[in-house]
Length: 168
Image (cartoon, rainbow, N blue to C red):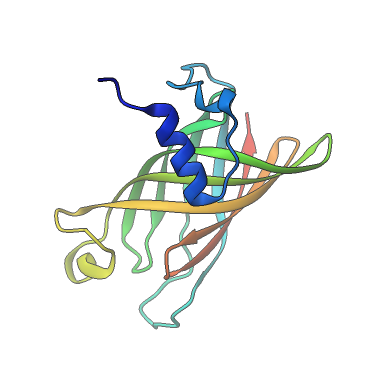
């Protein structure tokens, strides 16, 4: 029996509150066609807990590859909360929410992937990091103004990050 992609996409949409049309659900698997590349960096980070060990300078650099159906895949390098070099490899989807002008779009984004870099005494600071690689799911809300984008990313109960980037 084939995997029920349409039902899975509708279930994810229902759980996250993102609207998905029947046309979008029938577009599985995603087209292997490149629409644009987004290169981003971190602009601001704030941890909810003011632990003196936390750093708010993540120095993030990420590259995302987007297809015309708003699916994406990417990789990010950054300094984690404890100043350790960390990688996040991920895939996800954008969800348009509002288009106030022809050149402006408000959208949500949901990515999921693997984090590698929380080590030594900080290994247990993120859940499921038993082998040095942990799963992660990051929701965000953002805006696109022409080729410029910005996102507010929530990283669990730990904090938030604002990113800025350019589409190519």
